[in-house]
Image 1 (tube, rainbow, N blue to C red):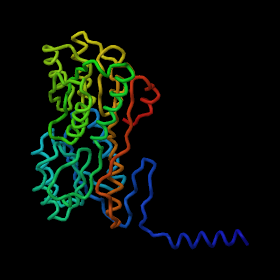
Image 2 (image 1 turned 90 degrees about the horizontal axis):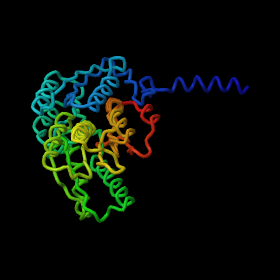
Image 3 (image 1 turned 120 degrees about the horizontal axis):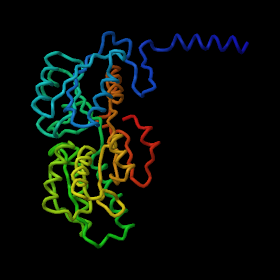
Image 4 (image 1 turned 30 degrees about the vertical axis):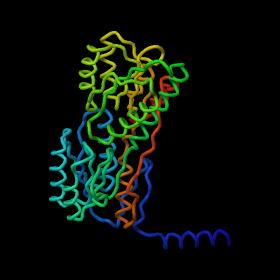
Length: 336
């Protein structure tokens, strides 16, 4: 009797299941709703390919929004130029894509093109870096990092480390290599450092230059800084590319990069290469900036396809690694 009832219940459950429900995949993304029919067309303007982090971010998008998963992804590399991104978004509008996704070079300058997208009835999803617009209804969702929080994580670690080392009174000379000026990553990470300077009277910025989030530019500006001074305690870099370039320049100049008596290098991204430098002691702290945002985008698109309301701001989960506790196993377990 129990077996008969179980079979009947199972049949009833099958009959009541909606035919268009999404199924979750092992990578965290969702299968597109079969009821949608044709492929979902997504135009994606990537800011560039300036770093390992950016490449991982692009690959995450391509994997999540693949034809196998029910999407047609139109990918555009803006080569780190905002004008190219605006041109690409306008082309996506003309192509009448279903969704527009972009990773903005800087925060401002998007009002007009996003108004065009809204007038065309195309939802826009912003990833990685945030934007500043007059009307937040011009985009549907933002997926990315809380860059101010990332900076605060780095600063708290540095304050704690210097206190533990008994260096709360001596002058701390800091070189600050900024990311692309005007990007939300640069703004948030810079703001955290500037706030810390106000409460740490012994901290001094001895040089501040733009590294544009690239190894080559950071190597160049760090080389110029070292011609003026080598009395440096901390180098605060706003991504791994900049940290690697700065380390290259410092080691060429004979400086030791490590938290145990050398220059303390702070970085962001936590790519495998950056974490390898952390394991070697050359980067003292590396705060994660998670590039694997494709599954988050796919999930939001599927929810919108089902007519659901989505939260406008979604911060991805992140952590931090320091040279004292990181292990090779941690690095090997990373997805990027």
